[in-house]
Image (cartoon, rainbow, N blue to C red; front, side, top):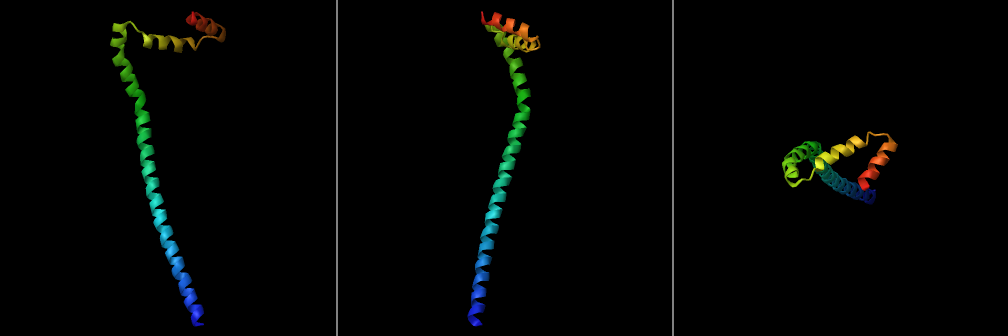
Length: 99
């Protein structure tokens, strides 16, 4: 009986140590999860503000485009408008652009 009792105590101590290790590992993983969630939230916030920053950059570049004679913004508007054309007319438009 005494050896069975000691064996049970040793087994229980081993299980306790294992549970403590698992709890530490779980806490570590939860901390990593929180850090990753914060990183994701920051990146989402940046991505949602990106269109407004690009729009202001586009506006700021208009005087430089005009000075250099490069009308990139105007060409983009034309391309977006051309996408609304019927397929046959769009093909003709793209072929004219190629020439």
